[in-house]
Length: 146
Image (tube, rainbow, N blue to C red; front, side, top):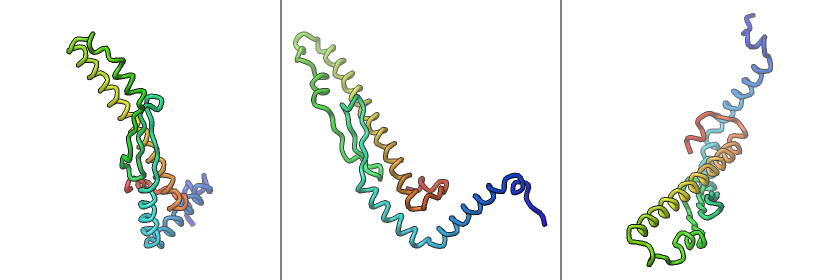
C-alpha cells in the first residue's frame, strides 16, 4: 500500500485536511440551506452598523454591513474653530480664499479617513458573520462575494 510522504511526515496534517474536506462536503450537501443563510445574513448586515472616526471624533461616519454610508457627523466645535472668530475684515480676499480651501481640504481628508475606518470595521463584521454561517470553515474568496 502506497502512502504519501506528507502523511508519513505529518499524520495530523492529513487528518486536518480530511476534516476540512468533510466540512466542505457538508456545506455542499446543504447548499439550499446555505443560500438561505446567506440571504438572511445579507439582510442582517444591512441592519447592522459600525462607526469610524477621525480627528479625535471630530468627524464620524456610520456605515452598514453592506458598505453603505448611513450618516456623516461633523463636530460643531471643529467647524467653529475652522471658521474662526470672524477676522475676515482683517484678511484679504485672497487670504480668506486660501484659508477656506485649506479648511475644506482638511475636512475632506477627515471624512475620507473616518469613512475608511468605518469600512474596515464593516469588513470585520462581514468576516464574523461569514464564520457563523460556514460554521467556522474558512473558504477562500467567500467573503469577497459579499
